[in-house]
Length: 287
Ligand code: PRT
Ligand code: ZN
Image (cartoon, rainbow, N blue to C red; front, side):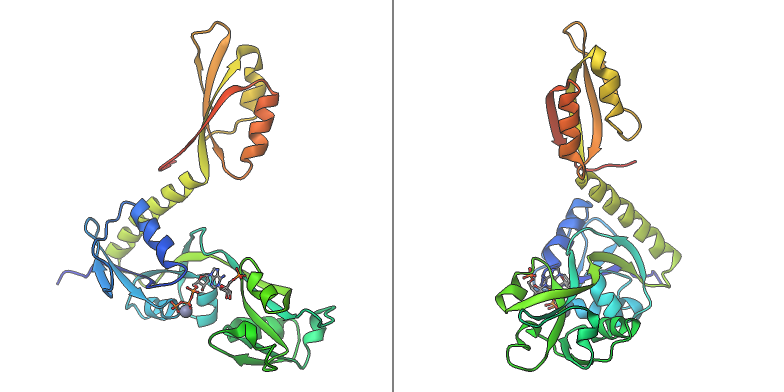
């Protein structure tokens, strides 16, 4: 019997859905007509996509109902499932923090002793409190955690924070950052060899896409007597390409630089004599 395709679980509708689909598309995996279906086959890759709630993804992947999944690290830690985290994906970034009403005189974690804390992530919170030797009562609440202190249901909350504006608009302040999280690609611990090979192919594509996103192709002109200074400022994948310009005494320099320290590097390049700097996005990058 032919083994079924590799099956990927992604969030059906929520904060990670759009980015997960965009990543598949950028990796050249085509899925048509996916609206409102639970399970869809990719057009041009031996892959099925299962659309489910994010809370269910860790369990489905552990049990082998899906082979791989895209989910927030927070959901994996909370679910305590045995999974392999294959790759961090760089989207869905947030932190999970403890927050208290803004007038609460908070000096240290000891101020949480004996308090009631509401959260949708009791496992992560209990681990943190026991690591810090704090006895507090943890109440599991499934939604709108941020309103509980205002209605006297809790003294503090533990929740996902991204910009922090939800906390502020509920009169709360962030006092302890417990973990950082982002979307990750996870896989079941017992994939068959053919499925592992498919996963490797997908992973190779995802890495090329994400690497390209974090890098820019840069072209600039420089007088030949500044070339040493300029190439010293450019890391490149190997080393920069240098081509003579039609104008005597000038060259064109091409290389790849990382997005992170981009502006700082451009500034240094200008100071070293670079002119006509062009910066171009890269679509895929294979190293
Ligand atoms: O229906 P389903 O169960 O699939 O979805 P869900 O409602 O449980 O999850 P969803 O779609 O809200 O979030 C999915 C994942 O996105 C989370 O598990 C996190 O890994 C990640 N993520 C990233 C976030 C946020 N950022 C975020 N800001 N998840 C939730 N939030 C909430 C947060 O709780 C707060 O109440 O957004 C609100 C606004 O945040 P501020 O700080 O920007 O105001
Ligand atoms: Zn959920």
